[in-house]
Length: 559
Image 1 (tube, helix red, strand yellow):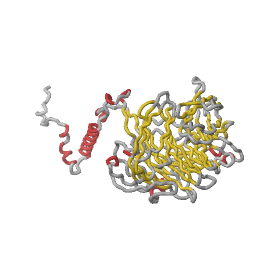
Image 2 (cartoon, helix red, strand yellow; image 1 turned 60 degrees about the horizontal axis):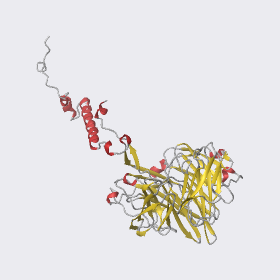
Image 3 (tube, helix red, strand yellow; image 1 turned 90 degrees about the vertical axis):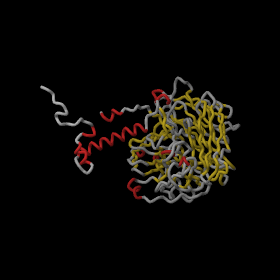
Image 4 (cartoon, helix red, strand yellow; image 1 turned 30 degrees about the vertical axis):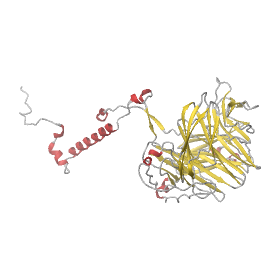
């Protein structure tokens, strides 16, 4: 049988746009569903293929990394600060800073932590004050829109307590008033996200808790180790927990003393609703038992929280204590002032094995071992201490703990309390183990005439670091200095300030060459003969992430 031709059948030559031609025509004026679906499908495919062509993947030949992976800047950074200390005798500064970069757009702001239901209808917080006692900071200024890196200020975020107008210039304001003020959460997106930093600094003049409290606010997490806490006479220490997320969190606080773990039922199963904070005093947990030295392990069983330890030794010194670097066989504690009159090292061994540690101190001439304090033995699951004594010859800068026997490494965490004195009055700061600066790190709250940066090269080779002081909150011209750090030594950098600086400013540290470097900033302000000071480590800002190479495959949308 002869197969009929298309022409004989009275059909036109098929083409994709001509399928059900009458229906398509009707679809343009509300016709058949089939026509509408086909048009929608064609439109979606066009968008998909268009985006794929406009944003092609990176060329693997140009990435220079195994597997063709490349790096990209982070697009969002979120940091949580604890409930501030506020009142007639205490005043808290919050400072936001993002270093200048190539990325554009985005925003950065700080808001009070509030429950989700209340946050939807909450009124904007009062504008931050221009300055305060002990703080030369100026209030934020200006508003605008779009592309802050191009010079135009970003628009203020509605409802925010503080908003950055552009990268490279910090902004400072006061925390919410009142003893029940919540914690705060700061979020940066787009060009503000890489290197975003928030500092919380409190000046407190009451005799029982006098001191300068400083903290570099950190992301929410699920596991935190602190050392240096105490329930001894005169101490009023507490753990601050802040749930800035939209889900509830369940937290256990585990205490470790010189004899091992301390079971406290009341410290388990602490529940934090979304957008709430809680301060947990340590003394009531132990009752009449006094523990001179404690390690605190905050374990989050559900959700995430921001956590910090607040310590106060009546009339002797007070501070915020940041979380120690994760348990590791080698720990470095940077930022010990050269005029310290005493130091107390507190170390915990969370593992199931004892730790035998070699104790070294970095000074201007390299690593050395303090006489009579060469080693420290820490029993498994317990806390051990070491009195360091006075810094003689201005040699202190950083402490390194490492295994006495490299073949027997045991993870530890550590914090050191350091004391300074002036005319019979003392003040203390607590310095936790910290990781290297990495490629870049920033700290927000620095003040003219009160800031010292300490750089320690922890590897076997020298390093070069570039320090940049940003413009101030009220103006000024950024300043840059490149510093050579010989292996094992600590270099102190003072006087790095923006020209004609007004207000507070940010400092960014970048490792240019050489081995790993740990860095810390000492902020020192003397009031009524009290040598107030606080020390914060520079934390790697992880401003870039690794992105694997992916090749365009249009067939994926058809499978």
